[in-house]
Every structure is written in C-alpha cells, then in structure tokens.
Image (cartoon, rainbow, N blue to C red; front, side, top):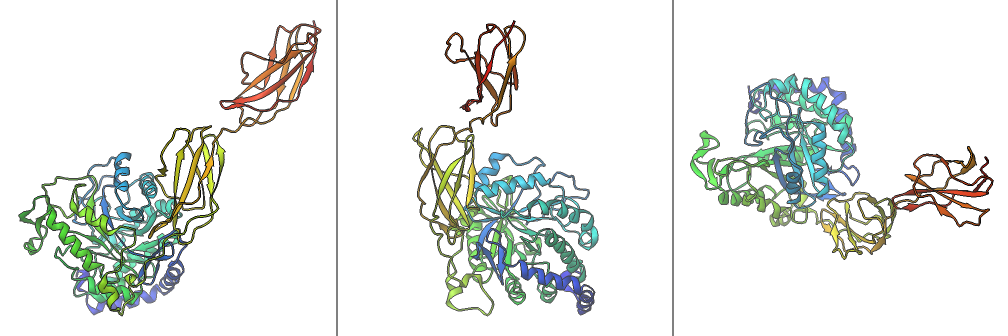
Length: 576
C-alpha cells in the first residue's frame, strides 16, 4: 500500500511505535523547542516563520542540481526526477562558474542543492564557502532516496538501507559545517516514494533527524517530503509530528497558474504543528520554444504539456504569488546549473537567459519578501510569516578602527550595529587613486582581518551594516598602511678565532630572514661599515682583520621590508 492511501490500521501501528519511542520523540520535541531560535548568525524559526538575524524571513530561491558533483558510481540505475535532474559529469564545477552563479543572485538568499553520500565533503565545503562570499545560504539535501547519486527514492532505502549510506555521511559531513552560518538548513532526503507505511517513514525521519541534531545544535532540519497526498493528510501530519523535523517541505509540479492542490492541506498541517512550510520546488515543464506533443505526465498530458519559456515564466510568477499569499516560509524553482539543451523539455531551468531567473531575482529584491496584500487584509487563523512588518534597516556601525596586522594585512574592528545580521566592507588604495571596492564576501563578526594588501600603501576602509532588509549608510572612514613587521632584537657575543679572524654568534631575531653584520676598527678610527653580504645563520666567522687592532661589531636582523634594531656591541681584538 502506498503512503498516500494508508488505512487506520497503520495509524494504530503509529501509536504503538510512538509509545515505544516515547523517550526519543519527547526528547526530540524538547530539543526542537530549544533550537528554534538560535543565535542571529543561523537560520532559525518561531512557530511557522523562519528567522534570519532574529527577524522573520521569507525567500524565493533556486533548487539547483549540479553544484556539487557526486563522485561515486551508482550501483543501481539512476532514476531521473523532474525535481532534480541527474548531475552531468562528476567533475567539480569550475571556480569561475561557481562564482558567476552565486554572483548573479541577490544577497540574503537561499539556494537548495544536493549533497548526497558520494559527494566529497571538501567539495561541499567549497560550494558553501563561495555561497558565503556572496551573502547566500545553502540548504543541503543529504540523501537521494537510494544508494546512488541521482534522485529516485526506493522504499527499501527509507526502511533501513539509509543506515549503511546516509548515517555515515551525516557523521562525516555535518560536524564539519555545524558552526557555518552559510548553511541554511539540512534536508534529510528526496521525496519518498509510494509503498512506505507511516511507521517506516516516521522511523526514517526520527533516526536520521536525531543524528543530525545530535551532531549539530545550530541548524534546522527539513524533511524533504513531497507533500501530503489527497487522501492521507492525517498520515502526513503523523509523520511530521516527529520532534526531529523542524521544517515541513512539499513540491509543486501541478503546472497550473495557481497554488498546488495540496498546498492548503500542507499549510494547515504546518500551522497545526506550529512549524514552517517550504515549497522546495515549483516546476513547469518547458523548452525555449515549447512542444505541445511532449508532456511531463502522460496521464495529465494537457495539464503538463511542454510550454515555451515565456509561458513558463508567467506561470511561475502566478504560482509564486498564489503560494506566498499565506503562511509559506519560502519557495524555490528548480535549475540545472550545468545546463542542457534549450530545445529539450525540462522542468528545471537549463539556461542563464531563461526569463524564470528574472522572476526569481525580482522576488528576492531586498532579501525579505513584501507581505502580499491579501495576506494583510484579513488575518488567518494560522500564523503567517507575511503578517509581520518588514524588519527595520540596519543601523550604521560605529567605532570603526583599523591597524596593520602583519605583512600585507589589515585588521578592522567596530561596534555591533542594531538590526545588522552581517557587514559589508569597502576599501580603496589611495596611493593608486583606486575607486571604492566592495569586498566579495560578507563579514558576520565585528572584527575582520584582510590580506594581500601592498605594504607601504595607504588604504581607506568603511563598512555598512547589512541584513535581510538591506544595508545601512556608510560608517566613518579609517586609513591604514600595512607593513611587514620589522625584525626583533637579538643578543650578540664575539671572540677571536684564528689569526686575523673574528667569530660572532647571536640569538634568533623574530621576523628576521637574514642578518647584517656591522664593524669598525676603533684603533684606526674607522667608521661603522656594513659587511657586503648578509648572513643567514646564527654564527659567522670573518677574516682579514688586522691583528692587535680593537674592533667593535654589532648585528641587525633583516627581512624584505628592512632591518631591526642594533644588537649590543661587542669588542674583539684578533691575535696572531
């Protein structure tokens, strides 16, 4: 029996399961309440609303396949799905392509992408780091629903197969990113297939979700569900009552001009459970010019016919309007970042010139979605993220100071700005007449050290408070001239060596890469003279001094940016 049509007998079994797991589930509920409002650096929740920087947050973003390659070869045939086309190729996406993708998005957005077992942890971290540079957060989908790389759930995987693949992957990846605020949330797996009981799916969410929360107290966990079937809303609710699930998800491939048929049921369930609802994918089957003979679902050939890009963009706009006219916390549109044939029909965006991307970009202007008119005209019985006023703009950061921090390095510090979730740093090189430049990544702390500046050049810096509701005005400007640290002091000893020779030894000077030896013949009234070559050791023997003359010697540490202070002076008289 499929999950969408479970009998009451399965509900009885769920009650028995809940009794058996009472301690685990109760603990999950408590932990969910404790983690619902983390520090401002992390995405949190309050009831049905998501929080960013302590304020309610709604988003429209992209659900992107191909950002993170899956390195393993699937032991089972890859099953394509409209929600996430199989990744083309196993090579990491070039840095220039990653930068171009995240650089094309509005800041303060969320990108959903796949990071299943087989995707190297280093590559996941690389993608998250680039997203962070551009003020984006990433929802990471941890499982495909099978033992391979391509989405396509198999019932046996959700029953117990995940324990051999997903749980070890969670234990490897999650601790590496638990303290990374550029991760928006974890999503457990692709939408489950038919053939699962409530107890089986609830067991999967309880076990996998608990493992993520055990390793990571900072991030929310989303289910990855495709949404409630028409006849099984109660079963969907029973599954999502799990204390290990913080965010409910659904997908919309109805391809009409309005909200998905299951949205009302899903939203009501989310309100009853007091958890946010995210529409993880809103897709419409299309190619550049359309193909009326092709359809995504032959059983609904007319409704799911392949339309042209212009028609799809209009439908996506209408669907977003309808979907976000209520308590939905966010929505994403599917995209294959590695592209595809523009003449082939697909539910995912395959080209950067698809007008759907403009629709998504417009919806993320300023980061926070404005509340739809109908949402504020009449209050709903269910909590709604759209009924709160937009968060105030960040205040101007005060107390900006700057100082050199090392060779080519500058450290800035400032006071925390009210309503700022992060900060934007601007700089210019006044020696070269450079225009103001924005640093490519946001800063979440109130101190920051930058490098690769030119020693001896004068730089000016200013910052702005930033957050989901935009940026503040400029702070005051500070000037800093980076310089390499000069070598430190050293202690010198000297003695006669063989005839006409003098031996010196000294202690190591901090930051010195070499040493300069100075001498003068006191007997002959000679001025201080620098030896013509530097010394890279801590002892040195010089020759051709005049026996029985009194010499004074000193040493300075040196590096590429100059010399340190004089050592103590030693007096040596070479003897025959």
